[in-house]
Image 1 (cartoon, rainbow, N blue to C red):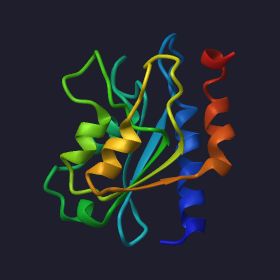
Image 2: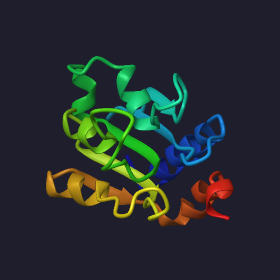
Image 3: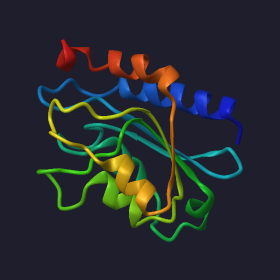
Length: 150
């Protein structure tokens, strides 16, 4: 996939983040898993199925963990995958690390608003996962969360 494809998929993920039910103290995030062939495999958004589900978690839950397409897939998330979490036993970073996904694209890093030091990107990179940051779309992804950042 090309960088232009990354931008297109991230724009779609930002659209998904707009579907999140508003919540005090939780970011609105969209995520899409795209196969190596450029086809969408699954998508999710924060609070899609319950008050605590995260976007990456929701998208990953829609596919069997042994789905062979995941090995060549890219996960697009409008926000850095969480590295700390109170509501579930596994963080989104841990869920990604347990999957065969080896490429993650984000729009912006998690600010120290709700978590003092999110290290999702660092943990993914340390594990050998390629992480691409599309800073050109960071402001659009942040704007969906203006209620938290103002």
